[in-house]
Image 1 (cartoon, one colour):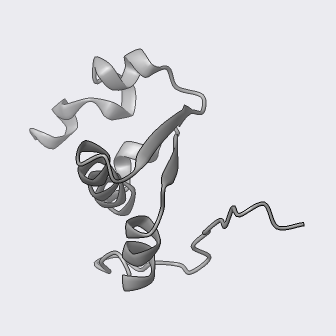
Image 2 (spheres, rainbow, N blue to C red):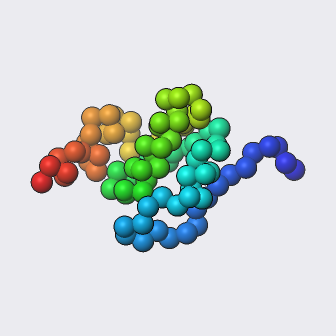
Length: 92
């Protein structure tokens, strides 16, 4: 039964140094809603952060709705940059 909802899941394994694929960029650009699952290791992934940046740019332009899902982290961990979201690890 088609309800007009298409999903995208990237099954390819990115290698270190790879950039976001054109397929992922196109999927984000053509989406109306992006569900972002933020886990403890989310902030340690360059690819996740690059995709999030793209999603948030489209969200700010009101071209896409971003829906965060916090999995085993709290929004305050992200907001207050605690645990793996701390900027201190980048200042070394």
